[in-house]
Length: 230
Image 1 (tube, helix red, strand yellow):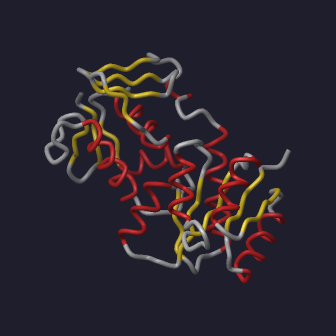
Image 2 (cartoon, rainbow, N blue to C red; image 1 turned 120 degrees about the horizontal axis):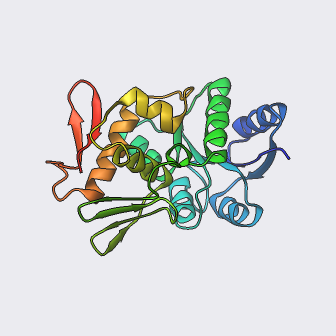
């Protein structure tokens, strides 16, 4: 069965070639032209991936993605004509990837393939021989239930945040470069900036560190990357 991709886009000049290119790659496509219908189709049609424009009628893409993230881990690529840093950070925080218009169609298709490949594999498969539960002081990572607790508080984690935390915590004391992290979690053909890793580390620190400005769990190795010290 081909992967099904939901396109939520209200610009006909972009929607038509995007749908055509995806079909040429062998994907099945669904289309919605406003945020409300996009959300409804995401809920009822269970697509394998969503390409979601930010500037949409009725509900904007950020709001749609925010709602979806409470209900599903479906991969989402955000599209926007806005390139401000705040928008990029917000897009990455809600979705799995963020593309600024105008974009190269081959690049977008590469991102689609990469996200679908990662979604098809278990995010914790490379740790199968390790302990299913990782503990560090009052932090507990349960790879079976895909949950993280700090003391008696359960932390909300996006799939990518959970995978990054698991990678670092299950290799306590080992330093990872940004490129190593990108290759393991984003895929070897990821097209993007290595600062994406820094953004995700910052989000993790805000959740698990007593003082995110002075982290003692996820520490920075200057000029290299990051290490989990517990």
